[in-house]
Amino acid sequence: MKLCKVTGYVLVCCLILAGFSFMAGCTQKTPDSGILKSDAMVVKTDTGSISGLQQGGLRVFHGIPFAAPPTGDLRWRPPAPVKPWEGVKEAKAYSATCPQSGSPAPLNMSEDCLYLNVWTPAQSADEKLPVMVFFYGGGFTSVAGSMPLYNGTTLAQKGVIVVTPNYRLGALGFLAHPQLDAESPHNASGNYGIMDQQAALRWVQRNIDKFGGDPSRVTIFGQSAGAESVLVHVASPTSKGLFSQAIAESGPFWAYGATINATHPKAFAEQFGMEYAAGLGYSGPDAIARMRGLSPEALINATPSSSSPGFWTTHTVKFEPAVDGWILPDTMDNLYLSHKENPVPFMIGNNANDGTSLSANAKMTVPEYVSFIRGRFGNDTGKVLAKYPANSTTEVQLQLAQIMTDYDFSDSVRFAAGSMGDISPDTYVYRYSYILPGQSNGAFHGSETLLLFGVPVPADPAVASNVVDLWTRFAKTGNPNGGMNLTWPNYTREKGRFLDINITPSVMSG
Image 1 (cartoon, rainbow, N blue to C red):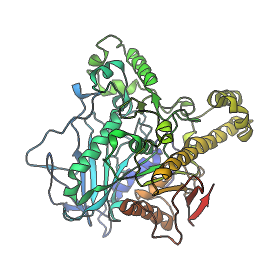
Image 2: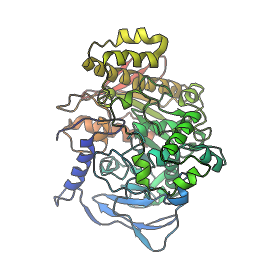
Image 3: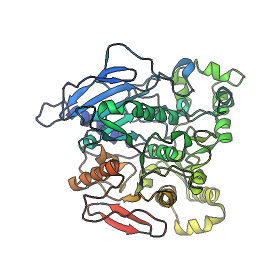
């Protein structure tokens, strides 16, 4: 299968298409195809009973509601409880994805999208298996946990329960506005997508034991924007107690990064929210009330596109987590600097070539590049240009890719891991440097997720097996060691040791 480019935080179009191709292949009636063969036993959740499907040794449930549809008056509010139902609800098909623009694959979209999926190897409710809850990437603008790309089978076959929830995106998930502040007892707005994730984690705490899971052993993990979400939860006082461990894969971190701003100040987010509303023709005292009557398509179509040239190298995503004083009391930079994060077992890393595909749309001339660097680095401009010189547009793109990898991802990893290592001895850092055969983008952004979720790419089976083993061993014990011929040491600022994940894993430092 040929892989194509990645744009934005989102995984490549071919990855998503590969996910659909993989699921289509599972319908082939071959002995070990993993075809969904029969009804799974009924599970009684706190809002009603559901029936799923038996997939080999797994029980699989798709489209379980964890919050009420965030429509009408519930738009731009914290997720509301699910209305209980009578009888047995079938949970055998993926829900709609949350409304989004620019998706590389055709999607079934609906604002009624707050559903999750469960893969469990437990055949009874008393097995107390560890749980892994995955938050997808996509720059807070696209992708969904209901995409077949994120098939939990490969991980669940290792003895863990996998949960993939949806969360609201774009303007529907992250609009901040003074009128929304006025509605909130916390004087906060935006971050509804993060609240959705928290609602999914609360559902796990209340219900996962019915699926054979242990609510005291919940590992949250995510890639790109999903990893940034993990970093937010680790630092957020409102997420404390909803999980016990965390894995962050290539997550942006800095409030003012080299090329990516991971979060926005409250004032910026609200000013942009007012400008966005005014652009739609709503600027009076009833702007939000009237906008709740708009179609989700109208709101999404008015959202700035993440595919426009240079978008990922200016001020990045407009609708994303904001420092609201409640969910996120301060920037992650400051929260981790002052050791205010939750001291849980923590695994974090990034890919050796995260920036190659993310900077693909950065079409800058050399003078524009110099001006951009000056605007982002100020007094350090000379040092940065000396380290990353460019004399042509091709070189500009290559250097932007390297700057993004080095500053926005690798440095973020070191900073977060250094802080967590101070307060949690079970802190582990990795670098994923394995390059899929035929790839010109190197170990590109999101390529490790292909192995985690069993997408049929031409990967070395030993590397794929090792990645899955490392992630699931960490979920089971808080320590990824035990299956390699070397020891992955915990991370400290002084030694800076990390695991390089490649055909031959090795421990490095520096």
